Length: 277
Image (tube, rainbow, N blue to C red; front, side):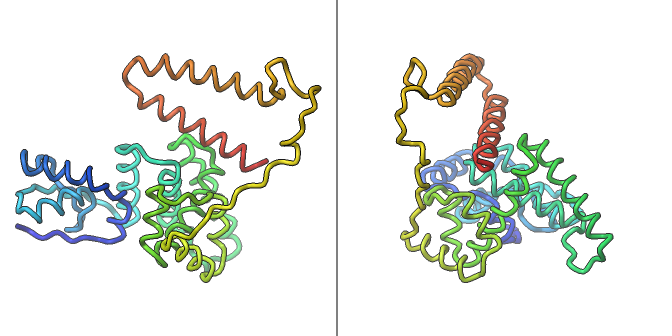
């Protein structure tokens, strides 16, 4: 059986399967064989890592299909786009993928050169803006979200360099860490990154709770409406009720892919609003 090259960077882009899902995939391959071809680029596996592992373990025959790309960055973008379209990802996983896509796209454009002259630097700003806006349209979020995602992805990858287990815990949702913390961590000294990575790996990292707003305890009846809510709270409640009413209608149609995409855009918009307060 032909050996295929495993690239650790490419492999790290794939969310690991939990034990139950892996076992179901293994059972399916043993019963039906590997019907879908593994995708390779220059002999390197870029799609089908779990199937390849199982096939090698049980000597199950498999086929491969070769794809052509101009660079590693193009491969990275293809893997990211494939995963985003294929999986039901968590907000932190989506943020990580979008950030990686942005960084890979900028490397293709050559905008990470630190030794350009001032004129070229001004051009870099234009490239950066156009890249974030283009990806914002693709992922249906704001361009500011894309730029923040780049910082989040850089921080998560830095944590992964210090501790692959810490990175896994963040992306799997086992550990909840605020995106604002990750954004800030992207520009912090390496010692701070290692410290957080260690705490996450050891299970002693605690997410700091935000302080309650100064007005949280105010019970001035003049600020409440007939339902006992303040005007802004009542407005959010009305919007939410209308949204869920529409969601229930759309869900009856069976196809929820467009529904999920719209809802994800709404969530990202709310996150943008929240971060600006």
